[in-house]
Length: 140
Image (cartoon, rainbow, N blue to C red; front, side):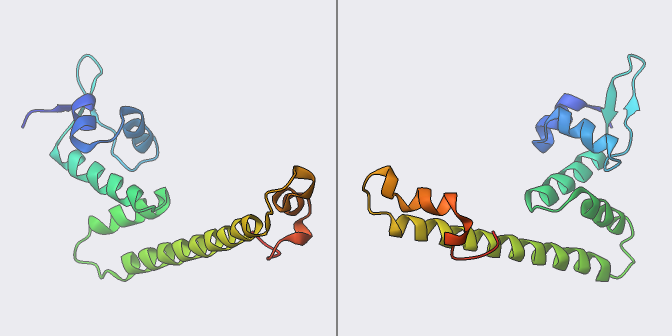
């Protein structure tokens, strides 16, 4: 099998070269084999692994969670309880972020709904931003 240069790996996986190096530094990708000219070379297993990482990042998984999932994927005989726990925790984090975003949306919508379109001295948006006590919610 012909070795794959980092630029080709980047093209085949749609991951930037700098990001590939970042994943190597973080231990998500193994250190590549080097040529006599000290150029990085990769194999098909690296392509598959990098695609896994990219997809996990697209879904919002953190680096440490991806490390855990990669480790689990290397042991197919193990039960998937730990992978399930990682995904459930991530889903809970997504739900928390969505709840916060919905609260922010309500705040901004309320400011817009209360704005009369008059002069800035009477602008509800400016008033609310200047005084947190005018907000609908205490936290956001």
